[in-house]
Length: 63
Image 1 (tube, one colour):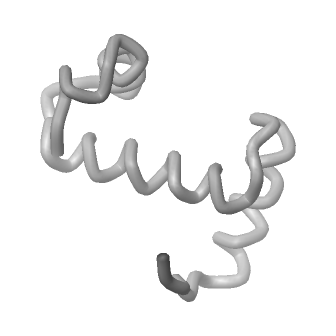
Image 2: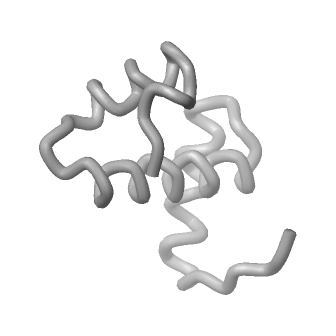
């Protein structure tokens, strides 16, 4: 575990989204980072496809 410094505006966006999604601020940031990493390594998949594959099991789609 470590500390990641992010821009104040991005932190505010994470905070607002975390409230809507009923996640902690850290969990929301981690979700966005994970989805972003998977999107970069699987550029032909949509957000919906990535989330569906993750729901089916993390081994289905690896970074």
